[in-house]
Image (tube, rainbow, N blue to C red; front, side, top):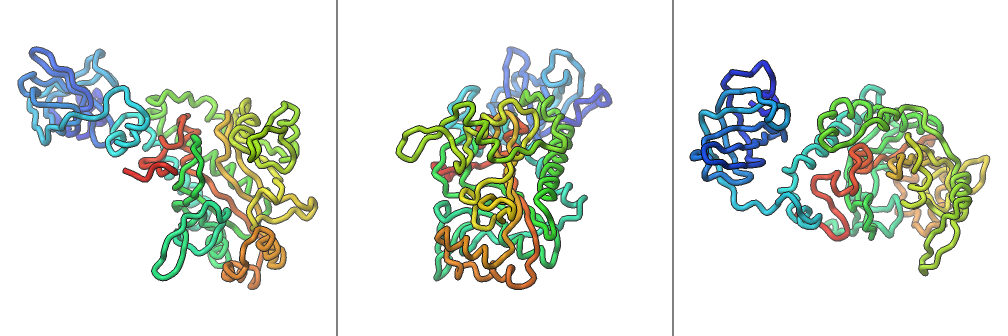
Length: 432
C-alpha cells in the first residue's frame, strides 16, 4: 500500500505493508521514528525497534509491515505505523542534501533534489496543469497534433536559434510549433500541441528557460476577440480545476489560493498605448543598450519590470492589446484600422508574474507577409512551404502560445521558474 492510503480511520488496528524511502530518521534508545516517503511523495511515521533500524540512513529504501494507529502527535495527519517487520532493500550512502543547501547545489543534485517534498508538490501541480489543459481542449473540440522540433527557419527571431548539424545540412531547434500548426488548420480545424520550445536567449532571469514546455493553439476563421476568449477560458479552467485537485500540495507550499479563485473570465484588456502612458505617468524608465536610462516611450517592448508595474495591484490577469508591429514577429497581422499596430495581445499574470500567453491573428496576405519578412532581414525563399499557406486557400486565422512553466510559477508562487520544471535548462546549465 501507499502511505496516503493507510492514513485513514478505516485502517486503524489493521496490519499493512508500506514501501518507500527514509525521509527523516530519529533514533532513540528503544525505538526509531522513521518518516517514510512512498513513491508518490506521501509520508507516514513508522515506529521501529531501534536495533532493527540501526543500519538505516536518510534515503535508504525499506518495506515496513505493521499496525496502523492514530496519535495526534504523529506528523502529517496523526496516523502512524507501529512496525512488526522491517525489510531493508538498500542502505543509502551519506546523503549530500541537508536541510539548508545553496540553490546551486540543489541544481547540481537535481536528480536527488526532486525527492524533496516541495519539488514533489510542484511536480504534482504541474501534472494537473497539463491534465486540465488537455481536458479543456478535448471538451471544446480542438484536435491535438505534434509538430517537429527540428526545423529550418526562425519563428521568434534568428538571434535566439539553437543551431545543429542535421546530417549534411544546417538546422535548428524549434522556437515554436506555430508555423506548423497553421498548416494543420486547413485540414483539421482548431488544433493544439504541447511540445518543447528552445530559445537561445542569454537571459539570467527568474522567468526564462532555454528549453520550456510550450502549449500552442491555432484556429481558422477567428477574430482577435475569439482568440482572447479561448485564452482566458483555458487559463481559468486550468487554474480552478488545479487548485481543487492539488489543494493538499498547494497547502504544503503555503500557497494562499484566495487570489487564484478570482481568476474567471472576462479579463481586463488594456491597449498597449494606454499601458505606456500609465508607465510614463509613473516616471518609469528603461535602460538602453549603452546603459543610459530614459523614460519609457511608445514603441518600447514591455519587460519584466514594466509588466510587474502594470500588474502589481491586479488580482486577475490582464491583456495588453495592440502592440506596435516593430516589437512583434513577422507573422503578426496588421490592424487595418490602425496602421503599424498588430492584432495581437499578451496575457500578463497578476502581482508581477508577467507574460504567460502571447497570441493574436496571423498575416494571411502573401504580399504583406513577404514584405514583412524582407523588412526583418528574413529570406522568403527559406519559408516557401509556409508562404504556400497564403497561396492556396488562405483564410483569417490566429492562435496563441502558453508557457507551462510560467503558469505553474504563478500558481505555485514559486520565486524562480527553474523550480517549476524537473530538469531545467538555462544558458549556464545543461546537466544533470
